[in-house]
Length: 350
Image 1 (cartoon, one colour):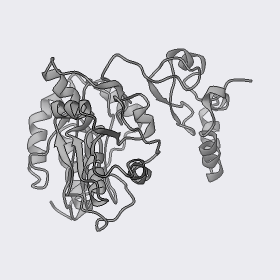
Image 2 (cartoon, rainbow, N blue to C red):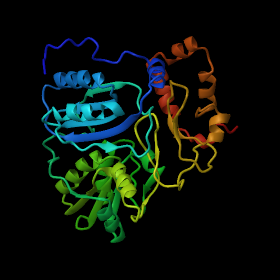
Image 3 (tube, one colour):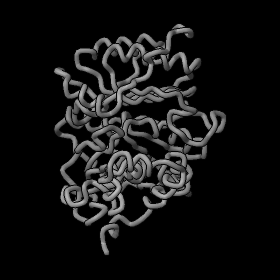
Image 4 (cartoon, rainbow, N blue to C red):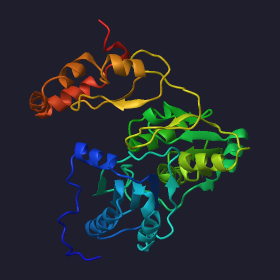
């Protein structure tokens, strides 16, 4: 990697509309892939630019975070580039043979641009590297072992945010109500207090949060900590390969791309945040100054123009120059942050 490489063009400059138009014009299929690895990285800016340059040439789109502690990637790769992309990843000694997880439901529109960012951590936990050993992780369980552990009465813990577990989760799972992973770690430790000698099994979307959580719990005296290898994504893949295996996950798996969810079972276990009818599709409020993530059924999407409140509907329908003017200023951001805490079921009631 050349630290003096020309950085011009190492950022995607298309706006969302331009990027989506380019995607629609593609005449090939894509695969949505995720992977992570905890590994010590250095020269992060140089490393970032090298990845961006190599992967942009292969038509890769998606969101990638790198930090001193490793890499976390959710990406979309053209099918014709899959072998080249695998080779490109393996060319980095730190990433060689890293396991790829393929999305449950394919979509050519999971991502619309390539973004690679340098972060302090690939999963923010508020802890420093010397507060626990992230390499001292729990036992990895495959889908069959996972199901057996559930049947034998292990304590099941969902290590995702509350809005993820709301639309899909494993049977009898403990689901923390935290907004962030940083808040979730101490919450889970408190929820499990007094059960340090019992078998604990952890799961998340792809496994990355469980790696840290298992190390964190072991550091705090939990003796039998286990995690679902490859997370929900790989669990579903193993189900598809073994038709005799029972699916113990109910609902949708939340994903952090344009789809916002993958169907895992036919059950709908959540409700529209506005009318209360059965629904499990997340959307972002179409008032871009708000952008609130919430569950909205098809009927409410039509009635409320995919907005969370009458005020957001009004602002969404203003001319674009007026919308931009309203978005200016810290006070407007604070106003909408406060607005997002209201009960959406009451938003359209007089």
